[in-house]
Length: 497
Ligand code: NAP
Ligand code: MG
Image 1 (cartoon, rainbow, N blue to C red):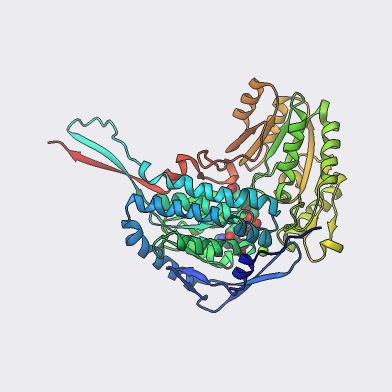
Image 2 (cartoon, rainbow, N blue to C red; image 1 turned 120 degrees about the vertical axis):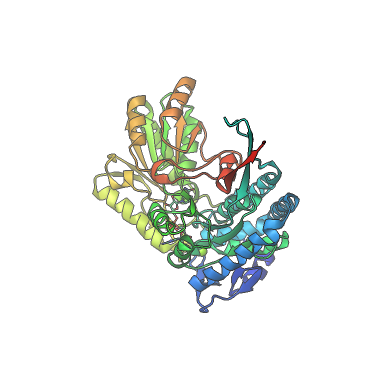
């Protein structure tokens, strides 16, 4: 393994530990002085110490955000919103490698990916939403009362709290805060404890981009304290939550007090379907990325692979070949394809799913081991794992594993696979691989999921809505849908008499 040395810029940044909370444009310790540690999942080494916010800090952040919303940010013209978001996009681009490095160190995503994708996508999101402020518009409905003229306005909601998980800290934070800011809202962001470090650096860039103090506030620390306090807080108008379905449900309940606007991006168990007529080279490469990219720790992971009977054995064999050959290693090694699992707790849970699946009768085709020695010492490594002989009612077929584990099922007909693909409480994403155009459209329409990929997988764009059906949540990121969701529609009636 050839691990890259930590760059001078990142070393300098990490020397700033212990890091503080970012409230009202100031760096402040937690009110009760609490801290927590951030670890590198590649080797278990402690990277930094961060402030652990409590409910008093949530109150302070709400006051700061409200002040910005009712003051300099709410009153800023559209050009100021566009300028700040554009500058943020430029700054993320200028610091691409540094942000990528921090993310790889903190969450274990391979550096080749974070450099090419995460920071770059985050910059693109800021630039995309920088174009929106001057395009947000109402309309003039044709009302029956001819002696009245009606127009609509789209107004910001106020203070939006954004709670994100650990798997895409840069992309999720920028994707969710940019439309909120473009619409004129102020933001409180609560990252996951396992991946907060890149967002401390991002906060510095947000400051440099010229947003007035308090427009964005960042609270690090435990979800059950901060996330729950944000969800229940009467001073918050919207909560955008991305994470597990269980916590999502608790957010719905906690938010009932002031009937907050809600957007929930939750769990998934995405079906990825390969028909016998598919271009097998691209389908197998796509299934590998869908299942094992970032060690399967993605909400859209192709977690149930359905393969039509005539090609089933061939696909299992070729996918297992790719899995056995994959280079597993430290996230800071440019040759690493599969990095570590984010945390020991998560690795334990994944191993329990693999062992449980085998105990329930699944066949282990490849992988299934935890790697703990030599170059893997101290890290949380699990081999890419393929299971066959999995019944649809087994736990590994139903629950989100969030790890490098792909059960492969065989099917006979289109109707059968549609029914099985939809037999889940989730509905975030699905993949279809076929050369038959009519079938592609039929199945895309029949699958109950917010995003369907045909002969491709894992594609996103700020212009295309993304979100879940069923237990995967409600509301959408991206597209014009997210702009509607960060504004209220107001109808103004004017008498013409
Ligand atoms: P999680 O446990 O639900 O945590 C997500 C966030 O919520 C973290 O910031 C967490 O803080 C916080 N949190 C924890 N308990 C909370 C509570 N009681 N009230 C409010 N906030 C609370 O999810 P995870 O295990 O980190 O992430 C994996 C899950 O996210 C998977 O289910 C995955 O499918 C889902 N996900 C969905 C999408 C999507 O777009 N649909 C994208 C990515 C991930 P701490 O962790 O710091 O305590
Ligand atoms: Mg970490």
